[in-house]
Amino acid sequence: MILLFGIIVCILIAIFAPKAKFLADKPDRYNNDKVISWKFPRLAVRIGFSIFAIICFLGTSCLIIDSDKVGHLNRIYFGKEMPSGRIIAAPSEKGPQAKILPPGFHLKPFIRVTHDIEQLDITKIDQGKYGFVVARDGNPLPPNKLIADSWENVSNMINAMKFMGYDKKQSSPVGTKGPQLSVLPPGDYRINKYLFKVYEGKSTPVPAGHVAVIKSNVGKDYVGDPILPSDVIATDLSVPIVPKDFRGVWEDVYTPGEYYINQKAYEVTMVDTRVHTWNYLGNYTRRWVDLQVGDDGKVHQKLHKEFIKMPEGAADSAIVLRVEGWDVFQDSRVQVQVTPENAPFVVASVGGLQEVEDKIITPNYRSIIRNVVARDVTVTEAVLDKDGNPVRELVVDKDGNIVKGAEGPIKMHTVTRPRQVLDLLYHRAELEKAVAAELVPAGAQAGLTVQWVRFGDPAVPPALLIPGKRKQLATSLMSTYKQEKLAQIERVQTEKERSRADQQENLMISEIGIKVAGNKATAREKEGRGEEKYLKSVAAGQLAQANVLGKDRAFELAYVKEVLSAVKENPAIVKMPGTLVIGDGSSLEGAAAILGHNNISMGMGKNAKK
Image 1: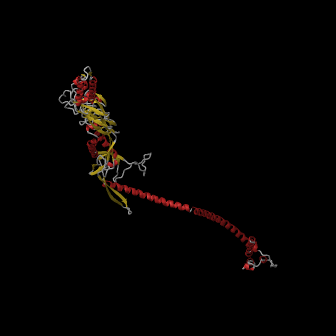
Image 2: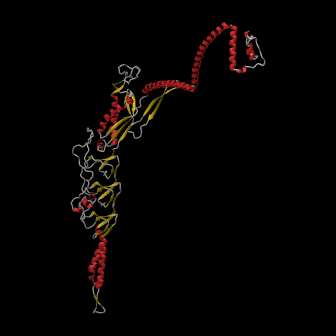
Image 3: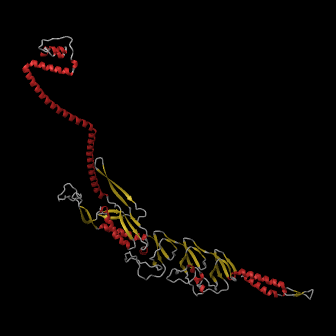
């Protein structure tokens, strides 16, 4: 304002100062014929004050906005008053102006006089965040709305002149006062901070294997036909979904990526569309019995117990089943999945995957499995005799005759009876199918796909398993004893064979000796018979000789033959005589003399006769 006064003063001086009396031409007091001229002083004053007026004008009309600033104007003088309730003034009104000054040099006459000028920082939205805009002026929000409608072009929204309608000199604003539905993505913005307040919000990243389901709190109400996924079973509890931009849960989902969603207007629910396995495990005491065979051959029982904790992250504890008056804890698993197209329906009807687990699947699953177990069951099982042993089919040959001692297949039959505890062990697959058949429709009502149900080993009371274990152990022991007996027999037979192999050489020698002895005996027998015949023939000849020669002469003759035979075999016994010996010519003295005086000669002659 001071500069403006200075400008006025300088202009007035520049105009009227040359006409002042003290600057007028005057006669020279020493020489009346001359006039003292003040032309140049008058010109200098006029130029000086004009320059000073220009400087003051530029000082009131020029300004420079920094590159990272935005010029904000507040008109103070020379404008009309704003309408009541308005916060942002039109260009001709006093008050905060909608128009802002971008960075750079600006020349506007007397702008520094008529306006307060404020340089404020530009608005920066960092990466991973979005700008939530609240307008301080504009049309009032309708009573049924919480947030203003979205803008097709965000640049038009943050342009205060267009937002207020001052660019077209409209009588009412275009934008609506209050929170805006459209948001600012990351970046730098020159925003009129007199009109807009910008708050930062975090972006919405959708990870892989998930979808973002949007529940809109703004928009029009949908009045068309109810929308349900094609594979969802509609019930009275089913909640329909709506098309995008309507109020309610949108049928369209956001797939993996990063989105700038106005979280004041939309509720975002992340739904995991991967396959999940919900475990119902633990939180019970497991008991079992070990059977051991002592050195005395008796079976001894030893009871064990262990508390099974519920694993971290399990859906719930093991389910307690009441079967035949026994409490049986059943571990189980359920595999489920929410498909992307069913995710909006899950959120609309229940709220989320955790709510589906807690409010839909777990209660229904417990009820279904207990109901299935409580029903009668039709099973195919073995026919048992009075001792509890399986009965086998008879084996017949091709002629239809029964083959004794042959074991045929076990005889089976189909029976319908109440569920037994051991069915949880031996008919597990049938039970899983029956439970899954009822659980799948229950999950489909909430948009959940149940893929399978699997049972673990039930905690069967030990008292029910001991008889079977003892029988199995007895059968095993009997089989073991039989095998051991066969093994011992085989071992003895093996030892015999090994010993026989070790004595094979002796056995061969013995067998050969036996055969040789037999051959010799046979030969001797034959020789004896031949010798007998020979002797009989010789005896007959000697008897005939004795009858002719006489017994004594026959004996001497035989004796001489033997002697001569011995001499033939052993010539060394023959000795040449040193003297000549002559006998009577009728006996063997001569032969004896030839042999010399020895046992042979002594056997001849008179000594031999005696």
